[in-house]
Amino acid sequence: MENENVSKNFIEQIIEKDIEEGHCEAVKTRFPPEPNGYLHIGHAKSILLNYGLAQKYNGKFNLRFDDTNPTKEKTEFVDAITEDIKWLGADWEDRLFFASDYFDEMYEGAVKLIKKGKAYVSDLSAEEIREYRGTLTEPGKEDPYSSRSVEENLALFEDMKNGKFADGEKVLRARIDMASSNINMRDPVIYRVARMNHHRTGDKWCIYPMYDYAHPIEDAIEGITHSICTLEFEDHRPLYDWVLIELGYKEDAQGTPKQIEFAKLYLTNVVTGKRYIKRLVEEGIVDGWDDPRLVSIAALRRRGFTPESLKMFVDLCGIAKANSSVDYAMLEYCIREDLKLKKPRMMAVLDPVKVIIDNYPEDQVEYLDVVNNLENEELGTRKVPFSREIYIDREDFMEEPPKKYFRMFPGNEVRLMNAYFVTCNSFIKDENGNVTEIHCTYDPASKGGNSPDGRKVKGTIHWVSAAHAVKATVRLYENIVDEEKGVYNEDGSLNLNPNSLTVLENCMLEENLADVKAYDSFQFVRHGFFCVDVKDSKPEHLVFNRIVSLKSSFKLPTA
Image (tube, rainbow, N blue to C red; front, side, top):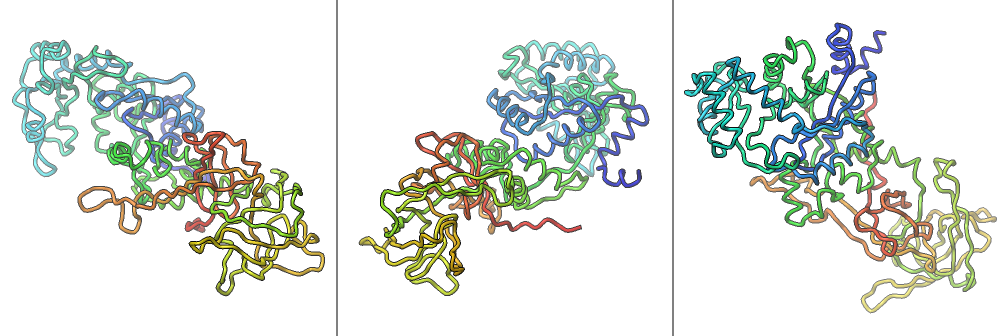
């Protein structure tokens, strides 16, 4: 039993204590995104954590959009976020909610606070409120409008709702404690006047609740037991509890809903800030929020990452109370681990040069049996055509090779993977000195890649039959920022890597890749794992994104 407790993270320990002490009967969690952008890898941690806790304790998981700030919110983002969460495998069943579902109840709650003497209408500007709030070392000053009577506050608040004041002219503040050591408790603003068209409620409201006021009410209405959020909300927890207690949703800070904070997931050398990504999109540096160089969930999915790889990554990162960062290489490790046994290993020539096997019959085509994945027999075999003319990668041939170069060069014998031994005899160059054609002879007795006389060859290269080759565009990705110089320049702009995208045209792929569909993924022998691009790939013009190379700089820490 003791060992079981050791493996539980601190959130699980809190939940189990709450169940044991009778603070909650059935666990209920939620993921509450703002629909003002696309989700990124850090959100995946929160989604999988909240959903995982609901699963572990046979509870329920809600999806709720925190749409209290209409200026930046769009239906496009709502659609993208729901798609991301579905793809990750978190199932909210029929429990999809919006903060805007509760605007009436939030308004009634504010009226209740005014009647209790716990809220007042203030005429101070945003700048004056900041000034009156004080600092971390100095207490705040009383708002000169805090002495208004309950009746006056009720009338003014109704006038705010009815559109009688300009944007920013008046706010509703909670009356708590201007001398509190926690700045968040110094009479925070809970409603502001803002004429904004809301993506769901249209022009019904011209006042909107602030997040710190709205969020606990949403949790309480939905019966959320544990409101899991990131560490920057730790100082907001007393306000979360104050709202719930004052409105009668719970008796004390021990009850539920209960806010629990955990450390955010930081990835080194990546861009997650919405304003930076927005700028990259608007300036055409990337082709949308789902550009495969980004770490939005939509971008990772388009690049070819899997839900399983993200779950493995989140599990490896763990749940902690202290902020820390992890290397992007760990995310790459997880996708390699997930794909290496699942995907067939196909032959693709990314920089083709033609090889003619002079002694192979001109019109002959033979179909060779090729194992799909040497590490997973269950994936079976496939037939691959072989003919007199093939393509190999340009880097697999050298006119004057250095020592220990075992691939193709004049006079050298190499193995064509799964096919025959061939010996390079000659080559042809164009007027610019580029090799355009290599001529070889093959040993018919070496079919399958072994010679009956037992002679050994050191080099094995992959190839594609020229007559059967499928032409494709292949995109190779590097980090969008220059890792050596860091993500940001001194002026706060992004330090972009000019080589973040390399587009290879006229790549030659084996014919078994002719009928691929969006998101299909494969290992290309020696080149890495690749995925069919969902946006640009067409049956008549295939486009593949490299998910990850085969080599890893990440080593899993040993216990």
